[in-house]
Image (cartoon, rainbow, N blue to C red; front, side, top):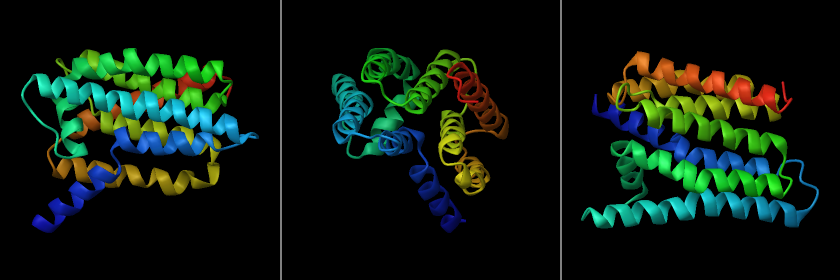
Amino acid sequence: MSRSINTARVISRITNPCFLSVVVLVLMANTNSAELWSTVNYVAVIVLGLVLLPIAYVLVRMARQGTRAERLGDLVGFLKEHPRDVGALGIVFGLPCIVLLVCLNAPSFLVATLISLLVCSLSIALVRRLYRVSYHLAGITCLIIMVAVIWEPLLAVIAAIIPVIVWARYLLREHTLNQMMTGSVLGVVVSVVVLYGFGLL
């Protein structure tokens, strides 16, 4: 059982949408970009708005509560316990990040992906006290759909990740099957609506 638990923990950490979304967005920023300087600008906005500033925000919040972060997982754990901070991060840093990317004429699929992730994040933060929808599954589902739009041949491979994540999260008792299913459904609905709005479907 301990080996299964350790495997589930590794899978859960590797597929954490908080980290994986940044990797995917940076890869997207390098796709179909004709100018190196444009790519540098997109990546800079993503790293600043989605990594550096949010980390600084959480560290300050934790310090005010008398706690310290010894690893990145502690930051994610703090946000799980404080859903309102997730909403605050989305509004304070996520929205400006989107506006900056639009002003920089970033690829529409990059902006659409960020909007989808932000809408899912804000939606889950709003209902968190009433129902623990799985952001893990919502975020991963968003990323899979967006990646499939850009790199269609990878769809079968990345879609196979979902059952593995469900197994890992269920084994770790992070969420019930219904909570994870709700998260995936939310990810699908939000992604499809945003893609349709951008004319990418």
